[in-house]
Amino acid sequence: MTHGAEFSRRGFLGSALAGLALPGMAGSAAGEGANPDKPFRNPFVYRFTIGDLEAFSISDCNLQLREGLGLMWPEEDRPKMKDVMDLHGEAGNQLPLYVNLLVVRSGKEVAVFDAGFGRGSNPQMGWFESGLAMAGVRPEEVTAAFLSHSHSDHLNGFVTAGKPTFPNAAFYVLPEEVAFWRSPEPDFSKSKRDKKPLPNMVREVRANFDILQPVMQQVKPGTQLWNGKVTVEAAPGHTDGHACFRIRSGNDELLHLMDLSHHALLMFANPDWTIAFDHDPVQAVVTRKKYWSEAAAKRTRCYGFHLPWPGLGRIVQTGASYSWWAEKLTWMA
Image 1 (cartoon, rainbow, N blue to C red):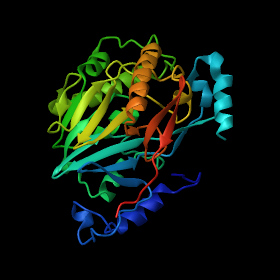
Image 2 (cartoon, rainbow, N blue to C red):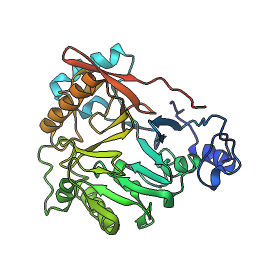
Image 3 (tube, rainbow, N blue to C red):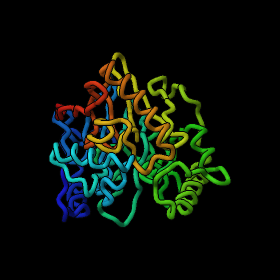
Image 4 (cartoon, rainbow, N blue to C red):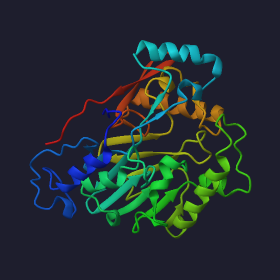
């Protein structure tokens, strides 16, 4: 998916939402009268299946990290990182920030996996609400809300106008994640990120947790939820309570990698390379190598939060290196 630099999101959404009775729309009133036999095709909402489950990948933003390779560590390896980027024709002066939000439907039940930046004034971000409408999902239909970790591009969309965005959904999170942000002094000493914004970030996370507290359910790693279809797995390093999610239906499986990778080249070419946003870079590398090795060996279908939209693919191993093999887009009939 590509977006022009002067892309007018509001203009597009105005036109798109004015004609929501698109072919293939299903579920809510937005899709009433649609012909379900025609394909669902949309420029930032991609429909696919996981066994018997209907799923959507929704893009939430069009942003660039202007620090580029300056965000990547170890610093002495940045020339090698630049070589990898140059080999694939990508510039290293900025890094694309994809934010892919997974929505899964099982009958009348709907689950969302992280909720993006949330509604705001910047037209280049916060598209999830509009994407849900285009997928025929109303916020009140969501019954399960899974949080991988509490950075703003994952947590903030769960709160709208001081209330839970999904009023009928249980909000699932690992206890280690809550404990970190609720601690008197959250420890960022191992992180390479800029420390100046941290006090405001901590306050924002705690405020969102306060709003979500009535629906929050802290679950242990390995817990199976949503009628056994979703397994919550601890994947620490990026944050203390960072989680990945394994979704199963019949013989099909999708592993949601969340923030184990922030780039489709760098963290695969060398799993030892980390990004400044990792709270514990050493642990992040250990976790990534574990998941990369297992996913490559088992040829597991994966979904990447920060990988090029729609984020579906597999991990391929070549010696000590890996690569992300994006899945071919197939527009469903």
